[in-house]
Length: 264
Image (cartoon, rainbow, N blue to C red; front, side):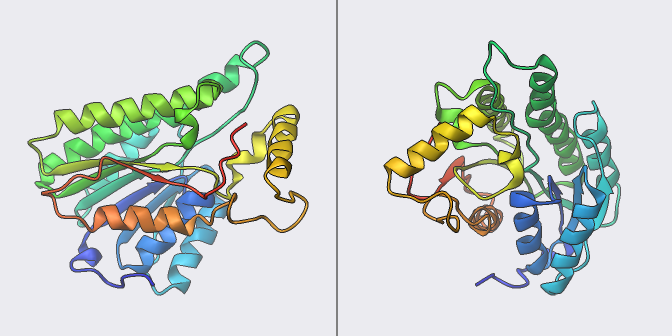
């Protein structure tokens, strides 16, 4: 069950990136249902409208939406600053937007490498810095939550894994630099959730993944098994838990994954 209407949630603003689908949508719906004032962003305006409708259907205040291409330098930082000038104090920035191309390093497209680095690393970095400026000006409390990936723990995850390792390093550095501030930094590390992130998986990678599933007794042609493909609501619950903690504690990292490990 969701913890409805936390104390002061209605006068706390939260920005969620990548909120048009997948993990970002699940996070937005859960936090909106808890009464937070949401500002959601992603590339797809249609997807954002659907997320806003889902939040309203759960009884939450309808989110403000903004379609942004987070690969464009400065776009997220500007958005954070604009939200920070509004009447509702910025309580959290949740960087859940991400893009993955599981290509061979020797055959991969450098344009896609740059897209992964722009969206997975540079946009969250710029957004976090802008959020810190806003939260310091407002006096806090504030949270920065960066959504990484279990792939960051792999030795063979390519540029996508490298981008998520970089994001985790950014989180750790910010945590050290903000020890004396009323701002906390958490990294949520999902593994194996049913989202659109896998739409760019290359055929040879998908074949290895299917073989791995079959070797563990799973049937990839049937309904997705939640022991492998987790429900994004579990990530949303983890995010909500972090936001419920007092400023006297910091949840540094939280790995949330289904029981089957089917890394490719």
